[in-house]
Length: 310
Ligand SMILES: NC(=O)c1ccc[n+]([C@@H]2O[C@H](COP(=O)([O-])OP(=O)(O)OC[C@H]3O[C@@H](n4cnc5c(N)ncnc54)[C@H](OP(=O)(O)O)[C@@H]3O)[C@@H](O)[C@H]2O)c1
Image 1: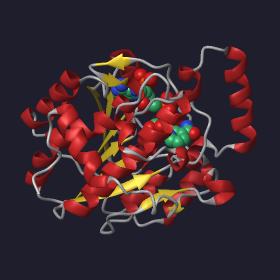
Image 2: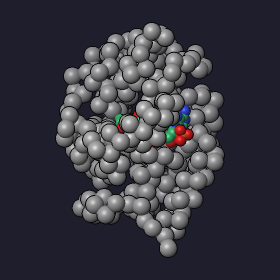
Image 3: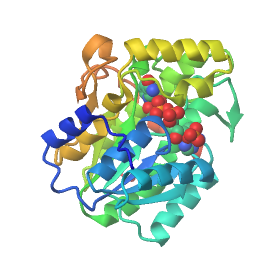
Image 4: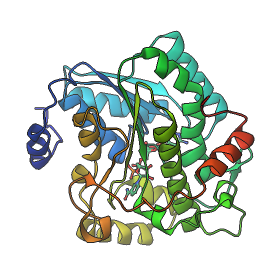
């Protein structure tokens, strides 16, 4: 017997909204093999959307696709390989989308890493590279194609309440080894918000932009960042008591999909310091965007990619 892994309260929540126009539309989820991305893929399958999981491991991707197929035998799910920390992988990914003329209705930038030890990859610090430069390069390469599709497209970026503790200056893009793990993560998530804000304000086309945060929820994000098993177990226990359940944290994407027509919104839980609850329209990052143009200009210099022609 196939057990559907969607929480019954999530089903109730999903059924509250008018999703009649999403059936058959395509959602592409980066990091869709795990945690929030995988739960979002389940919701998309439940809503009868076509799902593309973009992930960096063929094996983990295939396992995720298999699970979705078991839970939703009628679903249309497919895997694409993408490593957000590698420029060539992003290029290959975008080329494939263009060559195969893959239609996209929702692009969910969900893939992310947490407080990794300091590491430079392709001339960039790995946390900032994965969480921010990956989506930045992907958008730079894909935006013209999304414009050519002409129909309404929703692009969703993933921030975090951690963005509130970012240092918020131009140095966020290239942290030195002295910058703590936590600050690098916080900075990367504020940079995602900057990217969202810039595109929302400057791209007045068929593409709409959203920002989400999941609150705080127990996923593999934490165990991937720490080797200490005791600390990971402690964090898991803490998350079970204090965190937002995964099924609830993952509902932001449903709000985005449901809310056709309203670009520029920021969804996430608002209870208990924005840790917990159902996704609502958030305001907590509204005052943070003082360096937008500088950050985008510097990102262009660092990557060699222009985000968009204004
Ligand atoms: N959990 C929370 O409390 C929390 C709070 C705020 C924000 N967020 C954000 O929510 C998003 C999802 O996190 P999660 O909690 O669901 O964690 P997760 O279960 O670890 O999922 C993260 C996903 O990102 C993928 N990923 C990591 N590096 C990648 C790369 N270089 N290229 C492609 N994919 C990559 C992972 O792939 P692998 O399976 O191969 O590692 C995984 O599929 C992240 O952006 C995170 O920052 C989470």
